[in-house]
Amino acid sequence: MSKVLVAFFSASGITKKLAGNLADAVGGDLFEIVPEKPYSKLDLMWMNPLSRSSVEMKDRSCRPAIASVVEDISQYDVIFLGFPVWWYREPSIIDTFAESYDFAGKTIVPFATSGSSGIGESGKNIGELAKGATVDEGLRFKANASLDELRSWAEKFI
Image (tube, rainbow, N blue to C red; front, side):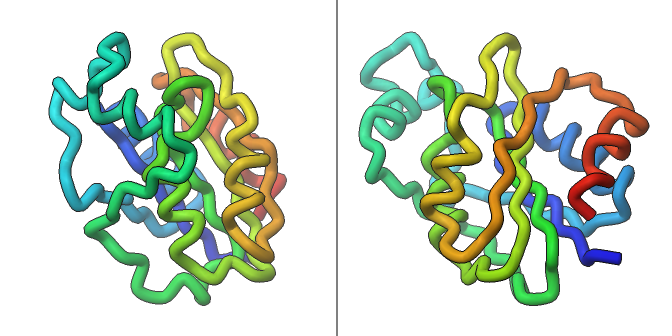
């Protein structure tokens, strides 16, 4: 059986709840990707082109700093990587995470939350950054996805 990590970034708490449920469903360890500089409500105003999140998402090279660290990523075989969908893809802090570790030989499975947007090309984007990993295209879930739904989906990767 694979050792599983459920790593996630959550701006409003929705992805955090889903990630916790996924970790419970598969018996995985839970790790929160915490930004060095927390996002304020003003930072997250996606309709404001000058908000921090808007500026970060326009610059594909942007890599917001992460305050938290996975102590021993080598112990994990499968990493479920969760995030809210921003501008039809993963937030830039997920790109930071994908470039921060040696993922050689690991499987990364993106999962996302969004009110209406799909996960887009997030899996492809993450695959280009997480060198050596096998990266699935991932899936967007409704915030209230059941444990059974999460377990059923995740078991094919474990």
